[in-house]
Image: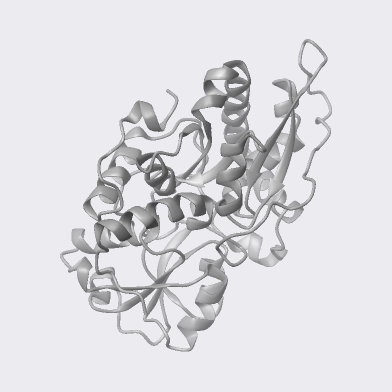
Length: 345
């Protein structure tokens, strides 16, 4: 099984391009991670009663690539509540299994915006892809005991902390990306040896069964799989998003440098609508959960129990810079991209 041993420089360069393409699939997925094509059509929703359309009366159609995860609840809620229409945008939300479809679609102009975890965007920028963050996405709750991501162990495990997993096998959904980066940083902070961990690449939906079978010692799970694992008897030992990096921003919405240069008003409108949608989801957590069945297959009893991320309006720059430092330390990038190259401020 894959281990934590650092790859050679040539392997790193090949992996950069692959991982950059994977992008959003490297974070959370309700289906198996990896490549995939956008679904046919998309989702557009009429404005909520009382919302005001754009002053001109004409809406600009845009397409946004997303994946069926809890992180993107605000954009679905924003479309449903008429927030994007108020900003002059007619939004089609196109579901893809992962960023292997979203990134090239945004690069080619087929899609106007896409969703990705920040590590993949940093890796992509270092590899020369013209991708830039225009609006923030989910953020950790900051509570190591109640977050939407946790390292989980079987009920009969002796491990009660991350340090107890030194030398053990931990499943992550994608090797050399955000999850193993923050778990390794957490191990270092707890005085353990991160190089001793054997990371096993495994799709999120497979993790609970593989943990129960004893094929791994722990899993780096995210919601809804934290809730599902706990229902199966697994125990939380570490909040890999909440504990190693304060206020960790996990993912974001991005577009290309060309789109920003050629249509700044469109980008500004999208950014403003996303900020408002993130705030609306924050102010209305029950509605944020209520929108999940419209684009996922989650059952209501799971939705009721799961922990949602925080949905800030602004990206945490210190968090972004820390993730870039971790990516550099682990050999995923050759140099830390300038902040202005990563995010529109």
